[in-house]
Amino acid sequence: MASFLLFLSIISFLFPFISSSNSSTTIPLSFLNTNTNQDFYQKLTHLASFSLARAHHIKNPQDSSISNIPLYPHSYGGYSITLPFGTPPQKTPFVMDTGSSFVWFPCTKKYQCSKCPVSSQKNPTFIPRLSSSARVLGCLNPKCSWIHPKNSPKSLCHDCEFRNRTNCKHACPPYMIHYGSGSTAGIGLVETLNLPNKKIPNFLVGCSLLSSQQPAGIAGFGKGMSSLPSQLGAKKLSYCLVSHMFNDIPKSSMLVLDTVYEKSKNLIRTPLLKSPFVAGRNALAGYYYVGLRKITVGEQIVKVPYQYLAPNSKGNGGTIVDSGTTFTFLNHVIFVPVMNAFVNQVKGFSRTEKIERLTNLRPCFNVSGHKIVSLPEMKFHFQGGSEMVLPLANYFSIVGENDVICLTMVSDSRLELSTGPSIILGNFQMQNFFVEFDLKNDMFGFRHQVCK
Ligand SMILES: *[C@@H]1O[C@H](CO)[C@@H](O)[C@H](O)[C@H]1NC(C)=O
Ligand SMILES: *[C@@H]1O[C@H](CO)[C@@H](O)[C@H](O)[C@H]1NC(C)=O
Ligand SMILES: *[C@@H]1O[C@H](CO)[C@@H](O)[C@H](O)[C@H]1NC(C)=O
Image 1 (cartoon, rainbow, N blue to C red):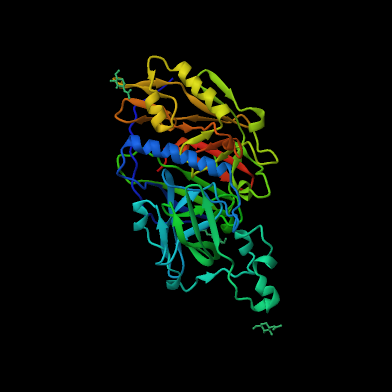
Image 2: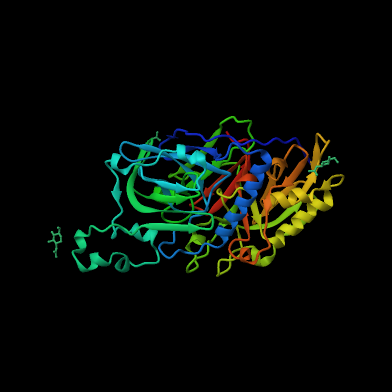
């Protein structure tokens, strides 16, 4: 049994600086809060519903008719970084997202964002006119096909084929990304990304002119060619997620991109599995899959059924690590026994179904009058025998006025959610874990530590 005393508060937006050594780039990573006026109870309810919306899109990445950039909504509960693009550099904030592989920023003075968090209006937009290194992505530039992988250059750049090919002035067609609770659209730029010791010229970045429901730009850290680690040629990506729980003290931790490989010490490791390539669902190829075998709750073992252990040829099944998801999503078949394991082992507290209905979180227990609560330990067991022991604050949270606690994982029995990854490991469960994506050896490593 693990005991805990919990408080929850969400820190405000930070504009950090960037530092770097020769072969590794270190970027401060902060918790992105977009709604400071809500109480804990409303925040958790929002985080639960956005985690479910996110799960829906992660699991059903339909290529859009115009483009198939894998992008998903982020509205609450994400982590942000600041990157300087252009000459001279202009700094803009981005949501750090391992579940997508494209980098875009709000762009030009005309940028329109509908139904976006009020806090997003304070973010600077990138002004290409003020940068001497900004170029519109040309139609025949191979990076245009990163944005439009479904189309051949011939169909994309029709006019160029018929006129003077070497003198083609046509821009790569605009990108447009739809998702259930938001969208963004714009044109591709090639621009200089300024890291302190390193300039990356001709970095493909989206100049978004129109978005809805976006708290900031998005920096895709997935496996796709247009992601930040891929364009940098990074061999390793690592970060440590600062806790969601702070008393309004702005805090950031570090995200590190290494271009020279050196093996990290003291990490628990499990292989990164092969991502599926499925026609019409390109986004799946950019996800980081790990082999989650079972979950233990105290004495009880919940095995991940065989068909969910790894993605099949249709891209269904498997577990991904997603920094853009807040609360871990578990397929219903896995979630129900996990929930029951808590219900069976937590004695002396009654369930509050009213709060469960309101928050979409289950199970919730009324702990009114108790200063200390003991709950079963929760562990994720990965392929190769590695275990992730979750700190209690990473799987239970206080809701409302300190008298109810709820499991901070989500599920949904709706059928469409049975496709795509079966388990999405979210950032709430990774708080105070150092995690490393070893891109050279396809290994995922982690260790529990206080992130700062
Ligand atoms: C930086 O990299 C260069 C070339 O890769 C190398 O010669 C130099 O020694 C490195 N400097 C440091 C401080 O590591
Ligand atoms: C294409 O354009 C280039 C640059 O303007 C020019 O040098 C070349 O002669 C043109 N070729 C044709 C076939 O028109
Ligand atoms: C929790 O239990 C206390 C005492 O039994 C009760 O007063 C309170 O209303 C309960 N809270 C909820 C959210 O059910």
